[in-house]
Image 1 (tube, one colour):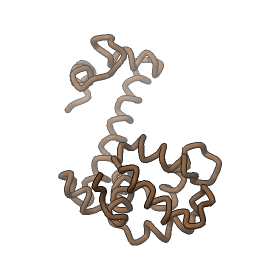
Image 2 (image 1 turned 90 degrees about the horizontal axis):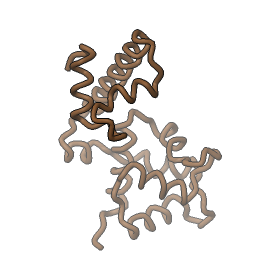
Image 3 (image 1 turned 180 degrees about the vertical axis):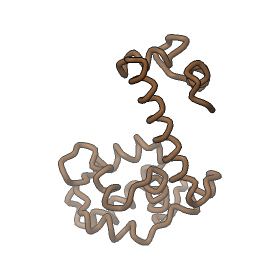
Length: 159
C-alpha cells in the first residue's frame, strides 16, 4: 500500500510522544515494551500497535532500516534521538484538530480528573476495584462515556 515518507512516520511517533507529554528520552523508555532497557524491533512494533499509530508494514520496514541500520534487532538510544530530533508532531496533531499546547492541556485535564476520582474514592472509602464497579453503571465490564457521565453527575464531580 501507499505509505507515508519516513519523515511522516517519525512525525507520527513525535506526535504520539508530544500528545502523551513525553520528551525523546522518556519516549525511548516508553517504547521499550519489555522494559529491558533497549528498544528492540518487537518493542517498536508493539508500541506502535498499542498506540494505534497505523504505520504500514512497508513504512515500518523503512523505520527499522533507519533506526537499526546494522540490522542488530535493536534501536540504540543515539539512533532514536538522531532520527526523532528533527521530527515534528505538530502538523500531525493539527491534522487531528489538536492545537499546539492543547495536548498538554488535555493531559493536565486528564490528570486532574484522575485526582478528583481518586479523592472521591478515598472519601467514600472505596478500593479502585469498587470504584471501577461504581463507574461501570450498566455492569458490562466497560466504563463507557455514558457510564462516566452518569458517575460524574452522581458524584458531583462537575463536567
